[in-house]
Image 1 (cartoon, rainbow, N blue to C red):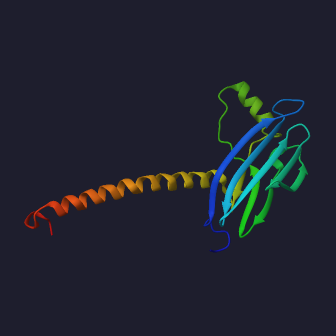
Image 2 (tube, helix red, strand yellow):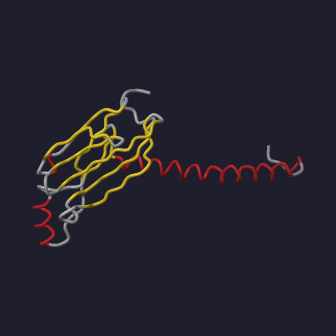
Image 3 (cartoon, helix red, strand yellow):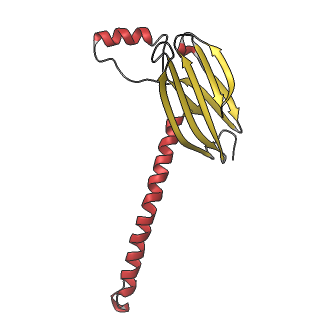
Length: 165
């Protein structure tokens, strides 16, 4: 495997939940489960909107803590094996639907945002989609094999003179 290749990466799950001890929804906790080169990792990230504290955990062990009040300015990267992991602001492509939403969006986007885990520069969601496609292909394979087996059996049941060459 070459350095930075996407081989050996399996996206297992991801969650995003809001909590807060004094103000509800004042803290966001992200969690990603991933298998890298056959080893399972759990990566957690907490973002306190009130204190600005950002924390990154790998398998329950804190590896980074930083206070950043303007969330879009936060970015942290670290290696796991031959792969580069990073927590970065998620690109949001939603357009506000009305003037009030547009004003609110322009203000909050300067101090708050959603985050994503990236592996080798690619968002975790891409790996999740790859896993879904692989799972779908694995479900289809038995059906395709069954169809091929039926065609072969039909071909063998024909008399030799009726079989196509």
